[in-house]
Length: 254
Image 1 (tube, rainbow, N blue to C red):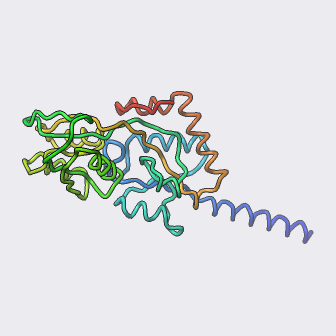
Image 2: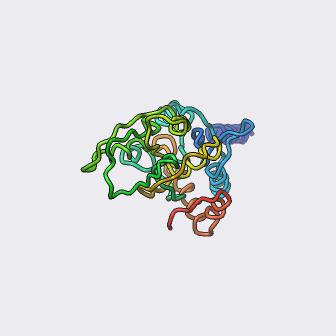
Image 3: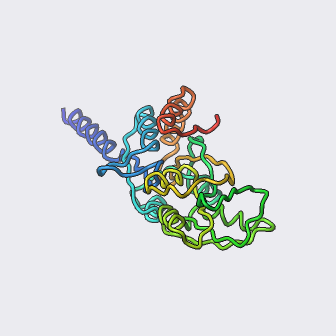
C-alpha cells in the first residue's frame, strides 16, 4: 500500500512540476503600426492574429508583450529575460546567430517618402546627392540606408530619429530633410494616422520579407519544430494569406 501511495504522490508531483515548467512563450514587439500597435491597452494587428492562429494549431500557450524595442530585444537575448520570441522582424546575419526564423510571412518594402510639392521621384539608378535623409535608428532600416550611402555616386547626410513617427513629423513640417527612409507600409500608416497629407511615397529601394524569430537559447528543438510545422501548415492552407488580406498586406511568396 505504501509503495502504491508513493507512486501516486510521485506521479502527481511530476505532473504538477511539468505543468509549472511549461511556461507560455512570450512574443515581444514594439509600437510598429500597421504591423502591431496598442489600442485600449491591448496589442493588435496582423502579427498578433498570425500568432494566435499559429499557437492554436501548435497547441501552445503564449503571451504578447509590447515595449521599447531596445529593451524587448535585450529581454529576448538575456537568459533571464521573459521574452523568447520577436515579431515582425527582418532577417540578418547577426540575428540568425541567436534566433530561429519562421518561414517568411509577409512582403513589404524599404523606400523613400518626400513632400508632394517637391515633385521628387526616387530611382535606384539615380545618385542621391546634397540631401538630408531622416530614418528611425539604430535599426535594420537605418542599416539598409547605410548600405545605400555606400553605393558609388551617393553623397547624403543621414539623420537618425528615436522613432519613425518623429521622422515623418519632421519631414512634414518643412525641415531641411529631403526624404524619409522607411518601411513602405509603416510610412503610409503614419501619414494616414498623423494627417500628413503633404507627404507621399516616391520610390522603392527594395522588397523584403518579415518574419517571427524564436530564441535558440530559450525554446527547445521539439517546441520550435512544432511551431514551424504550424506556420507551414497555415501558409499551405491559405490561412495566413487570409489574415494579411484583412489588413491589405501582401503574403510572402511561397
